[in-house]
Length: 343
Picture 1 (cartoon, rainbow, N blue to C red):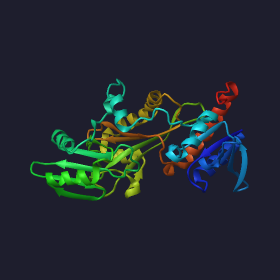
Picture 2: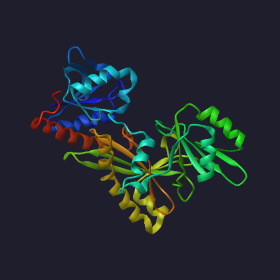
Picture 3: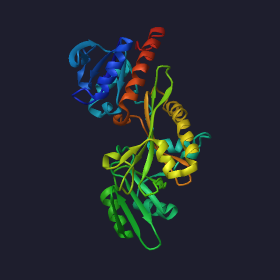
């Protein structure tokens, strides 16, 4: 049995190596590949397999299941990915992708998850920023399809001035300067704004909880790991790529929320095994991996910042490799019962 492991990196990743080693226990051969390795005319793939502690090139038939990252669906790969959609079963075929604002709007009317929603609006003109600053006092501006916290700003309004924060910098500005900021940084770049949720440590650093979930050997969603991301010294977000650190939830919640920590932790654990089913239902397609970013305000209330369908794995490689290997075995056994991959 073979499973494709598709990324955009020329060199096989550490996750691919560990997943390949675990998958061998199920007699599954992992084929590491990139979009350019697909040989459409021959219905073959020129990939790499991990044999005797090294990656070796091998040409095989298109695997019946391919674990694919969303990044591979970029414009230049459109023909190849459309071919694969019709030829095999993908871990995510990118159907009905939910933008940040669309997801917030849908969940706003959902009885089970509406409490997680943050007021979110599309930024169309400079006046939108002023209007919502007047309404909320503090707002966050972020690209609609941004990744890793790039291009995220926080704006605050006090009685006599405004401030704008970006990464570790904060600057006091006036209304005219906000107009200039809009023209230079926001206009025409497909931004949204959200009411600012004060998810900060006792020391004032922004943080969130990344809930990373994967499907496992029973075909159901499992929590791979919940972990707190702390933006040490940052003004806006808890992106560890811009400086910061991570913590397990238990000690962090104990230190920052006292007796409330148990209740908050239970809510996070419950969200890990409930919200993914809702996201998959809304997408109306198969999904295998999700990263949900949750803010926690000073009262211990949870808020959904965003959902990432291509979450980073550096902080939990072993957990992801284990769950995915088991899920590969599950899905291949399902194919034996009903060959849904024959298209």
